[in-house]
Image (cartoon, rainbow, N blue to C red; front, side, top):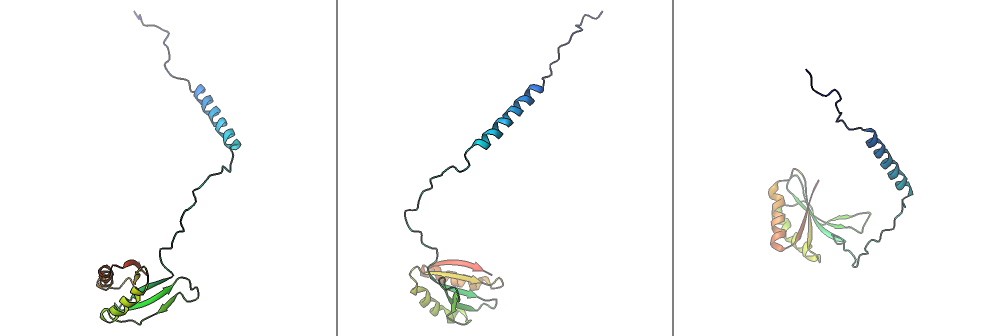
Length: 144
């Protein structure tokens, strides 16, 4: 005796209506994107002050070679033909220190660029950094 019902209701949802809805949304967005104005004007804020460059026209550069010798160079950003003029030949730190102090103190912002070779010792670079900190200069580090 089977008293169960022979007519069972399927609980599955139909996907046909969902497919139609997605297709209609796709068509709507395609039409709206083609009708939208491409060149929307945007009002950007204008600077109120003239921005100054991070480096002045002349910057004192200390180049530390692989042999831990120091060269002081004066880099002139405005000169395109010869941007660097060598102020001293390779020398040890003790020989170069006073000359470097004179050259950096001439610049108004007291910025110094320290360019060390990859094989230069850390001590050679840190000696110039310690001098810059003691004298309250603004050091910029670079390497090649």
